[in-house]
Length: 212
Image 1 (spheres, helix red, strand yellow):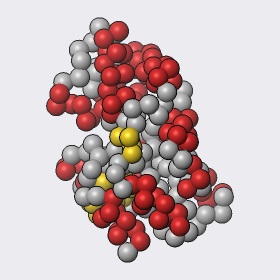
Image 2 (spheres, rainbow, N blue to C red):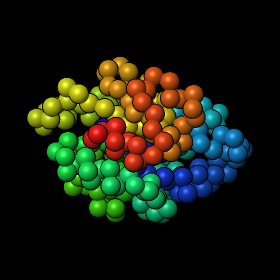
Image 3 (tube, rainbow, N blue to C red):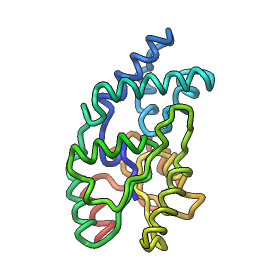
Image 4 (cartoon, helix red, strand yellow):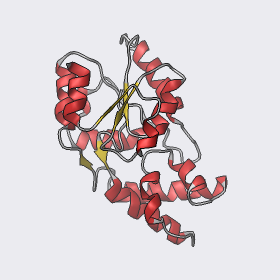
């Protein structure tokens, strides 16, 4: 099971300018340099409240505007895949291991990115957040739906593992007893590794951990 932002893809070149536009339109302060990474990964509705100080209604409006900008610009625009990560995904697929995403990025955005980079066929399914701006889908919400859906497709989910880069991955997986491999190339801080079963420095290291 894969997180997307900070694990498979770096979308920060598009995400951060959109956030800046939204904050400017709402007459709110711009993102402090030491908080930039905190915006990548968590649910956007949560981030606009916790990091920008918006109330729930304001945050819902902000997320709607942010997603409008993303749609206008193209969901795959300014997205790059981490070096070596596609090779890992292809090797896992070739080994016959079913793969899915469990990301709080909206599912329609993941679909667009995967289609653009020709990754769709390597995954049994894509699971992401509900696109509605007022829905605060947590990692646990998405992970739960992903496990249930994979099970309904006849996939053996008795030994799942989630690859992610934020404490939200570790926290969300804990309720389902899903071990997490922490991707250090993402946006998380070293403190966020706590609770993961393994932290890896590179996709090559991840490949060895998954496939031996």
